[in-house]
Image (cartoon, rainbow, N blue to C red; front, side, top):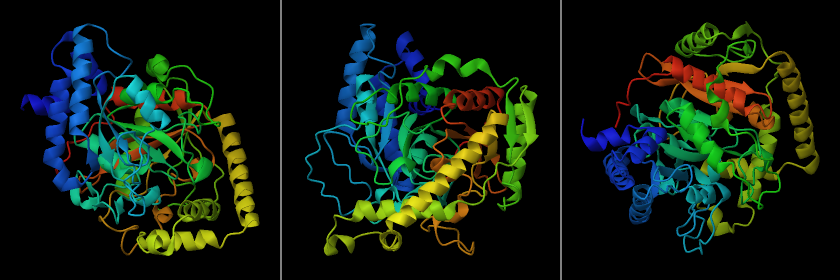
Length: 469
């Protein structure tokens, strides 16, 4: 193993410890990360832009601070990538669309990006997204198809697929993505990494999403401890988001408190509503068994969820119609054909349709709230399947037309705004990663993270390294 490979294998916490000891510098790590990106990018297509000069300049400044023993914030010198949905001053945010003018001006950081800068992070580049983040796989007319690190013929998932592939391949240990229906959890599950969709409002957003209060931001990392560190940074307050939550206790503080005594409801298939592939079901059940070994009380229990897909579609499709509303006829001709279909459906919805979807959403939230009166956490598969062929919205011959057909475990918890994390729990017969999902009541982010960290500490999350790139 070369030194460069060694550095790109380290977590953010290990990098920070190495900087403090003087074992290596942020410049060493930035160069190793850029080399890694150069090697894997032609294979997986995870980045829309790599800011090499800016990253090296930031790493030089960080190295100077570490040598003076005056690091800046919690992430000084750590490479971080950012999904190309978040504003980042100095370069275009194209959102996967040929309809966005790259000329800008681009003078403002999104709240999460601003917090990264304040904490000394090295912004390494912008990662791929489907157009406006509209679907659960990552391909777009602008940037093409993003591929899975474990099998280049498969999808990385989406809509934060570039971030998931980058983290899985050592192209920076940290990334931030967005999640409106599973968009950090889907690709994290497919690519074998960790991701958290925190309670809505925990991470301030600006501009606000056209998909409204379905859309969260979230950390995508190699493990739960790195995600806690990243979330503690990017959840810093920002006046531009009027819906942000009040500051909470740092997640890092209680991460090691374990799961002993927690009441966990395990729903393998939402009461038989979801057909889960046998390899996935078996791996998730083993992960639940590990939680029991760690002292949690486990009971098979299905929350009262009748499929809320129609309500979700109304809210999601109208959001898509809204984001494309300013476009002229020539610009609309440039859109992803699937997005065009969704926009047409959303444009036909009435205000009463929208309010009926809001009512269904509130009722689902009430039922999940009742479930969490009994159970601290809910465990499900993250997805009922593993990564399928790249370049399509749904698996061929699946009978599904839209991405929501194969993500029944993720989008309900965007409707309810609950915290939900995915942790790797094994691989299928083809060597493709499987994810286990941990869901808490609203504001119970710390419990979700404690359980995820316990699984990492127990070794239940270990996977073989990616073989595709």
